[in-house]
Image 1 (cartoon, rainbow, N blue to C red):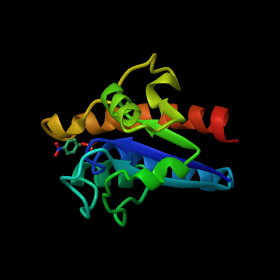
Image 2 (cartoon, helix red, strand yellow):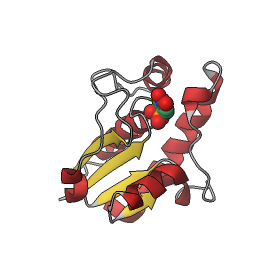
Image 3 (cartoon, rainbow, N blue to C red):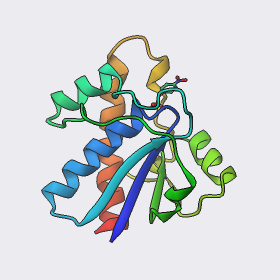
Image 4 (cartoon, helix red, strand yellow):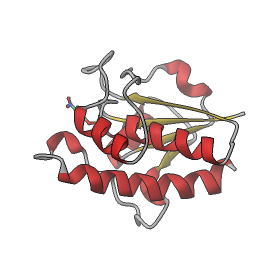
Amino acid sequence: MKSILFVCLGNICRSPLAEGIARKIADDYQLAVKIDSAGTGHWHVGETPCENSVKVAHMNGVDIQNLRARQIHYNDTGFSHIVAMDRQNYQDLQDLGFKNIYLIGDYGNLNGADIPDPWFFNGFEGFHKVYAMLEQSIQEFMKKEIV
Ligand code: 4NP
């Protein structure tokens, strides 16, 4: 079975949102795929996703409240697809020795763009943009790489 690990820095804003969106797509299309997320950093291990990610997910019918942050681990080499949210995540994953790394910005119509780190946003507005970017890119990623 194929398996996807979405990776960002903290595993509290972008990658939990990506995980929730991918789970919804997998449900809708009845895809047999394992889906998880992790952070390259350790700072937020055990925490729930950030409030604005929970909120924007909920507004779109996606429930991510029960996810908990974890740090990426060498056992995660078992995932068939490791998906970075931005170029720094991609570089960090390469440096850690992971293979099968994908940049989510290479899908949808993002033209290689990074998913901006919403930790540094003031307020909620940027989370709508992040959600829209993730939704279109993950849909195409799943269609091309997983189905
Ligand atoms: P994420 O956002 O990588 O999308 O989960 C961040 C959350 C926390 C930090 C950085 C990014 N931080 O530096 O604590």
